[in-house]
Length: 154
Image (cartoon, rainbow, N blue to C red; front, side, top):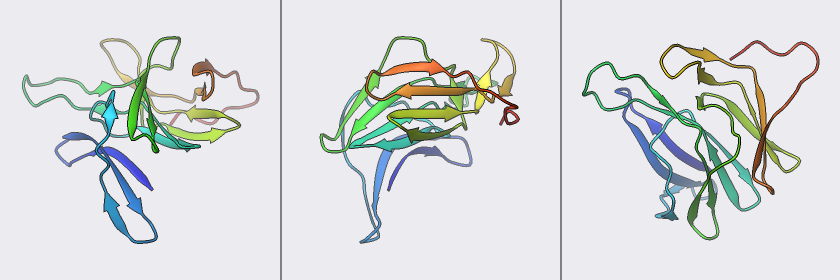
């Protein structure tokens, strides 16, 4: 089992990756190379083949200057378990910056639902019920059109 980042009760965020060997009940922190992700919490981390796909998340800037708002991320990083290397996937259309969304892998794509989005560069945050997919082969994002009554934003 892999765990990335997280935060403290005072909103300090982290960018460390930990692996829990479930058989031995022991933790290991791989010291990896490459384009390391920003410190964040409430991001999604899914497994596809030998790769971990990390998307989104939030951080609270330092306490000074006062009254800074949260920062949401639209960064997507892929971690190769066998190579112990992070890769930043850049460019193209992508979802808005978000945190607290859900994600899973289905038929070669990462499917992302909902989450907290920022409506404008200055303004309020809002929950979403959008569905985005990231094709894990072509590395292309797509906003999906759904049919029927969607779930409430969350």
